[in-house]
Length: 118
Picture 1 (spheres, one colour):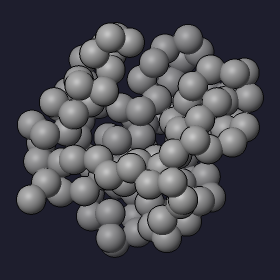
Picture 2 (picture 1 turned 180 degrees about the horizontal axis):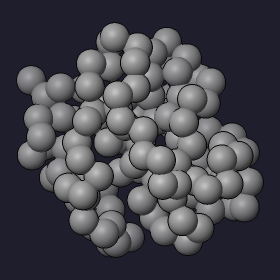
Picture 3 (picture 1 turned 90 degrees about the vertical axis):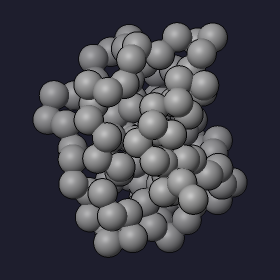
Picture 4 (picture 1 turned 120 degrees about the vertical axis):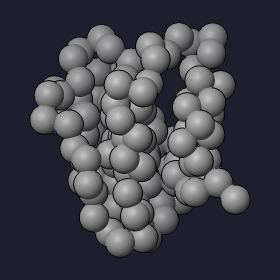
Protein backbone atom coordinates (compact mmCIF):
# COMPACT_ATOMS: atom_id res chain seq x y z
CA UNK A 1 0.00 0.00 0.00
CA UNK A 2 1.09 3.52 -0.67
CA UNK A 3 0.27 5.13 2.64
CA UNK A 4 1.09 8.57 1.28
CA UNK A 5 -1.60 8.14 -1.38
CA UNK A 6 -4.31 8.30 1.25
CA UNK A 7 -6.13 5.15 0.16
CA UNK A 8 -6.65 1.93 2.05
CA UNK A 9 -6.21 -0.99 -0.30
CA UNK A 10 -7.03 -4.02 1.80
CA UNK A 11 -9.88 -4.08 4.28
CA UNK A 12 -10.97 -7.48 5.48
CA UNK A 13 -14.73 -8.06 5.17
CA UNK A 14 -14.80 -10.71 7.90
CA UNK A 15 -14.47 -8.77 11.15
CA UNK A 16 -12.26 -9.73 14.03
CA UNK A 17 -14.04 -12.12 16.38
CA UNK A 18 -14.45 -11.14 20.01
CA UNK A 19 -11.61 -12.46 22.15
CA UNK A 20 -9.04 -12.78 19.35
CA UNK A 21 -5.88 -10.71 19.29
CA UNK A 22 -5.49 -10.03 15.59
CA UNK A 23 -6.64 -6.40 15.48
CA UNK A 24 -3.08 -5.09 15.06
CA UNK A 25 -2.23 -7.51 12.21
CA UNK A 26 -5.52 -6.63 10.50
CA UNK A 27 -4.71 -2.92 10.76
CA UNK A 28 -1.13 -3.46 9.58
CA UNK A 29 -2.34 -5.58 6.66
CA UNK A 30 -4.81 -2.87 5.69
CA UNK A 31 -2.07 -0.23 5.58
CA UNK A 32 0.83 -2.25 4.18
CA UNK A 33 -0.79 -4.88 1.98
CA UNK A 34 0.92 -7.69 3.91
CA UNK A 35 -1.44 -10.67 3.56
CA UNK A 36 -3.39 -11.40 6.72
CA UNK A 37 -2.34 -15.06 6.47
CA UNK A 38 1.31 -13.99 6.88
CA UNK A 39 0.71 -13.18 10.56
CA UNK A 40 1.15 -16.01 13.05
CA UNK A 41 -0.93 -16.15 16.21
CA UNK A 42 0.50 -13.47 18.49
CA UNK A 43 1.28 -14.51 22.04
CA UNK A 44 1.70 -11.95 24.80
CA UNK A 45 5.33 -12.96 25.36
CA UNK A 46 6.41 -12.45 21.76
CA UNK A 47 3.78 -9.96 20.53
CA UNK A 48 6.00 -7.00 19.60
CA UNK A 49 8.91 -9.15 18.44
CA UNK A 50 6.60 -11.13 16.14
CA UNK A 51 5.11 -7.92 14.72
CA UNK A 52 8.60 -6.59 14.09
CA UNK A 53 9.75 -9.86 12.48
CA UNK A 54 6.82 -10.05 10.07
CA UNK A 55 6.99 -6.36 9.17
CA UNK A 56 10.76 -6.58 8.62
CA UNK A 57 10.32 -9.63 6.41
CA UNK A 58 8.14 -7.54 4.10
CA UNK A 59 10.38 -4.46 4.24
CA UNK A 60 8.37 -2.44 6.78
CA UNK A 61 9.00 -0.93 10.20
CA UNK A 62 6.81 0.89 12.74
CA UNK A 63 7.34 4.40 14.06
CA UNK A 64 5.56 5.32 17.30
CA UNK A 65 4.00 8.74 17.81
CA UNK A 66 2.30 10.39 20.74
CA UNK A 67 -0.03 12.48 18.60
CA UNK A 68 -2.00 11.55 15.49
CA UNK A 69 -0.20 12.19 12.22
CA UNK A 70 -2.02 13.88 9.35
CA UNK A 71 -2.15 10.67 7.33
CA UNK A 72 -2.90 7.08 8.20
CA UNK A 73 -1.79 5.48 11.44
CA UNK A 74 -2.78 2.73 13.82
CA UNK A 75 -4.22 4.00 17.09
CA UNK A 76 -3.96 1.71 20.11
CA UNK A 77 -5.69 1.90 23.46
CA UNK A 78 -8.56 0.39 25.40
CA UNK A 79 -11.71 -0.54 23.53
CA UNK A 80 -15.05 0.20 25.11
CA UNK A 81 -15.03 -3.29 26.66
CA UNK A 82 -11.67 -2.52 28.35
CA UNK A 83 -9.53 -4.83 26.19
CA UNK A 84 -6.50 -3.42 24.38
CA UNK A 85 -7.39 -2.74 20.76
CA UNK A 86 -6.03 -1.28 17.51
CA UNK A 87 -7.83 0.68 14.80
CA UNK A 88 -6.80 2.58 11.67
CA UNK A 89 -7.13 6.34 11.83
CA UNK A 90 -6.53 9.14 9.37
CA UNK A 91 -5.64 12.42 10.96
CA UNK A 92 -6.81 10.97 14.29
CA UNK A 93 -10.28 9.99 13.03
CA UNK A 94 -11.23 6.31 12.87
CA UNK A 95 -11.56 4.95 9.34
CA UNK A 96 -11.37 1.21 10.06
CA UNK A 97 -12.09 -0.87 13.14
CA UNK A 98 -11.37 -4.56 12.57
CA UNK A 99 -13.60 -5.56 15.50
CA UNK A 100 -17.06 -6.96 15.01
CA UNK A 101 -18.18 -4.31 17.53
CA UNK A 102 -16.85 -1.48 15.33
CA UNK A 103 -16.94 0.96 18.25
CA UNK A 104 -13.37 2.24 18.27
CA UNK A 105 -11.36 3.16 21.35
CA UNK A 106 -12.17 4.83 24.67
CA UNK A 107 -8.98 6.83 24.22
CA UNK A 108 -5.69 6.48 22.37
CA UNK A 109 -2.45 5.60 24.15
CA UNK A 110 -0.17 5.78 21.09
CA UNK A 111 -0.10 5.91 17.31
CA UNK A 112 1.95 3.59 15.11
CA UNK A 113 2.88 4.60 11.57
CA UNK A 114 4.09 1.85 9.21
CA UNK A 115 7.00 3.00 7.08
CA UNK A 116 9.12 1.34 4.44
CA UNK A 117 12.38 0.20 6.03
CA UNK A 118 15.46 2.04 4.81
